[in-house]
Amino acid sequence: MSERYVSFDRTQWADLRAATPMTLRESELGNLRGINERIDLDEVAAVYLPLTRLLNLYVSATQNLHKVSATFLGTLAAKVPYVIGVAGSVAVGKSTFARILQALLARWPDHPKVDLITTDGFLHPNRVLEERGIMNRKGFPESYDTRELLRFLRELKSGRASVEAPVYSHVVYDIVDGDRVTVCQPDILILEGLNVLQVGAPGSDATEFVSDYFDFSIYIDAEESDIEAWYVERFLSLRDSVFQDPNSFFRHYAHLTQEEAVATARFIWKEINGLNLRENIEPTRDRASLILRKGRDHRVSDVRLRKL
Image (cartoon, rainbow, N blue to C red; front, side):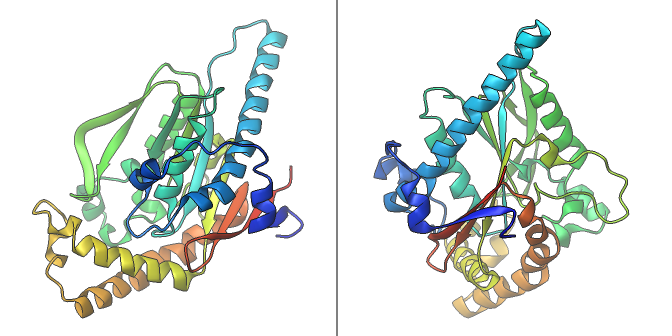
């Protein structure tokens, strides 16, 4: 990996912030944090601000390239979103990362419209997963409607005025029938999901992949033992909050004792999330443009940037 990436420790990466201003307040950051996330403004300054500076330069260069191409062809340049993929394991902090990145990028003057879509909306409905006998493999590559996700990205990158995506509810743990979210020509689109860097399985004849539509991709990395611990912490927090909702798919976990809840979370990790990480997610890490490595305290310890 060392030959393909430039490596930075936390201090070296933080120095690349240069004069990038802090545009988030503590109160705003609080609204963006996920369950059990410990991100503070120091983490934003050291990790996210250098990244948004880099991405701002990349977006500007890409926009200029589109203008140059249009000038050469004698046409008007269609507004094509800059697409950023965010990948990594369950419980590694992808969602919080993507929300904070969205908020910061939207404060740059050259690209104020930044949308965020998660691939959860492109999971097959539970009824389909049950029919195929893969309900216990939800989150694995075969549980996604990849054709629909590729359709969404294809239309978005073609300059369509608006593109629709399905909506997923984490409470009922399923696609919401008839509900769609509309994306209308953003300057930047962040696509966050487990397997967004996935390519075809061995023997597959697929020729089109989700990552084909990315301008930049980020993988959030950590030791599996740390991610498992974060997953167990999150499960315990959900037991005391979301799982208490009578509409929750996981309401049967709401009354587990502490010992039962920990054992259940560890079993789910071993049989599903950890397995998916090792078999499908982690093997895609080295396809990312940027790898952020987290330590046990959730803070980013080092960064690797792919060489151009």
